[in-house]
Length: 139
Image (cartoon, rainbow, N blue to C red; front, side, top):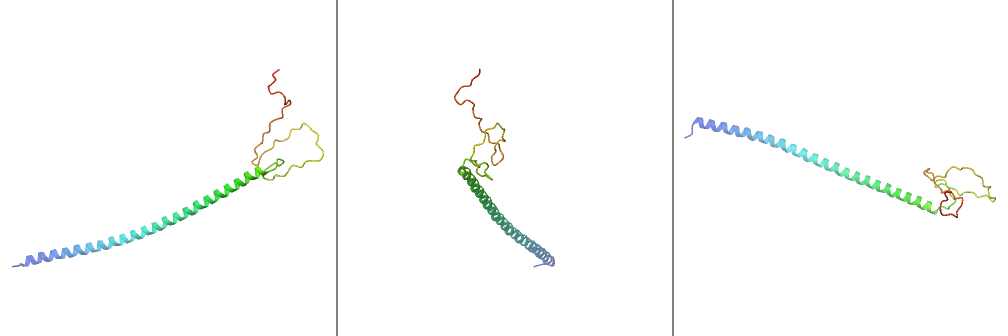
């Protein structure tokens, strides 16, 4: 037969089991809340990553577009230089040199060296005084 002590012992165990179940249920609810917050954070980060990817693609497209425009500009400048008549001075504000009807008297003046569009001096070989000899005369 059952004694009163056995019933009280059983009642204590049931009380502890109920207490443990309540505590575990609360912990479970807290963990589920943490899990849902973690999943929401994950979705937020995935949206941010996707936004960064789209921005990166737009940046890359912009850079490629700018490079294409620079290439086209460079190609146009090269074509302009190759198509320019020989009488032009500078590439930027180039205008044909005016030639007068009367030949100018030759004077020995020192002219400033010509320069290209970047301002770099263009060196022209000095005309040789005696074009015939192909060897240097030492004496």
